[in-house]
Image (cartoon, rainbow, N blue to C red; front, side):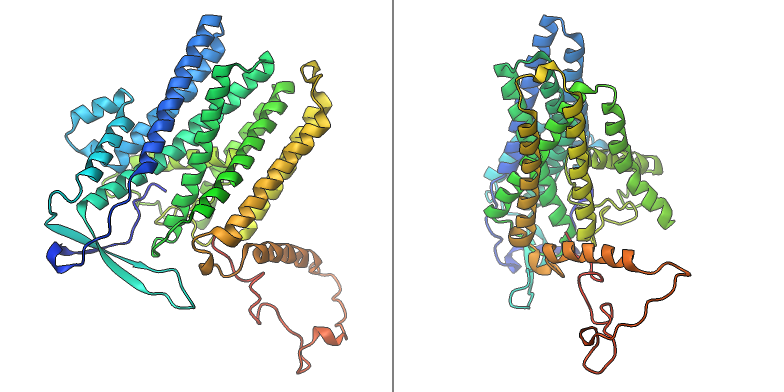
Length: 465
């Protein structure tokens, strides 16, 4: 996820006069939205930490500052890494990043590039080649020029997309869980805390949305992708219901079983953290050297460690939309099938239901005026709504749905069919079943049909998510 998106072809510089004019640049509103969320969350964290300090709550004061400072430092490093500023002689910019002002400077730089675009003629451009999404079974390859201004804006958007994901799942998600937990213990939701929690939830949903779009662009890098407003709406409601339900479930469980929340959190986090490394060690692939050419082996290890750390943090709260593959040049698995997603949501639903059951059994007097059964039903229904919006996105609104070998519904049904068939297979040494004489199981020529030979896409073909 930290690699720059491909698609530009290495060619000698081409004069602008030899190519058709490039389309107008789109305004970098996504960069402005990221900076506004970062600034609002910083202001809210500082204000709440000051209030906790004045009230004598040193633990809440320290945790609030920690959940703000840690992701902020990672965001600054991400912006420096994507723009390769560590190898450049720019001491003032490095100082501004140390003062946590890097996103503001980058935002000003982005809008300066956007508003001054076209005032100075660019002597050279690069060529990018993309394929269109197939229409009526045909796909056309389009070649167009990319100017220096558009290339810089693309780099800034990519950097802020990654920064938004880091801020969302390593900062906003723990912060929202902490503030909701404090509200439950104190049985009070102040105006400042409610506004801060709303900002955190919006930041998490926005980061999850950027994660989805970023995953689509990396997976289908060879295609010219246009995301429609309906897709953004589906992703927003999908992620909103999923993340809000997950946070509430964790807070309810931790409020009655403070000690037992640690095994749940550690098992989830370290399970997702070590899963990509286990797959990498099992594949016996060489150590990846393609993260960054100028990086040493130690630097590559640090980047991969932080990447798996972020991957685990995302999967703690919601589906990450990608499977991390360390030995792949793009660091993600592009041949992901629906079965992994189905298993994730099934296990997450069971886990949420189990945690809610434990909360219902061990709930204390602070929930005296709460209708516990109704709250459990509402949370489970909200999680089902998140799954429903997810199915709607992949079935109707995904920008690359025409490239799927099968629909998501067919893929999920195929996964259950494969599991059912695998259970029915005879064990080694068990007597074989007699052949069926039912004519419906035989082909017209009298021989039995074989799903794998007839190209059944439900069990043999994998679908890209």
